[in-house]
Image 1 (cartoon, helix red, strand yellow):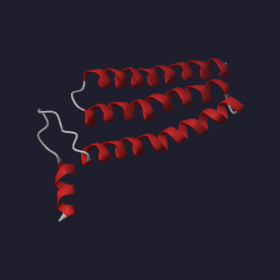
Image 2 (cartoon, rainbow, N blue to C red):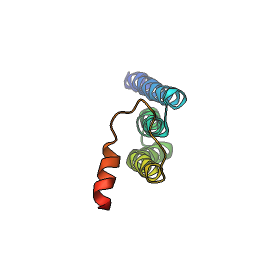
Image 3 (cartoon, rainbow, N blue to C red):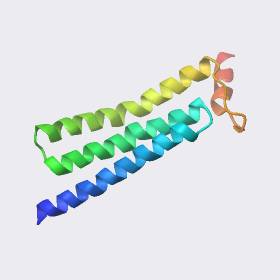
Length: 116
């Protein structure tokens, strides 16, 4: 009974993770500039991959594969947002422009104030 419940829960978490991966990939194709695309890909790394890793843990338990999935999931959860932030910051400093529909550049204002 408990195995059936864990398998169903694992399938649900896997579908949620795959849904976020799908939305992130759709955002990568549809969004207009590098900053928006990086935002979408950061969601793939955090929510999507973490959902898949959590599904593996629910399915296998604390086996060697489950422990590896926990380690990979935590690593992605901690590093993907930081990596996306650093790539975005480097792109902004190298002059990659915003799309024409963008109306506010708060980071640009902060960078100009810190350079003075």
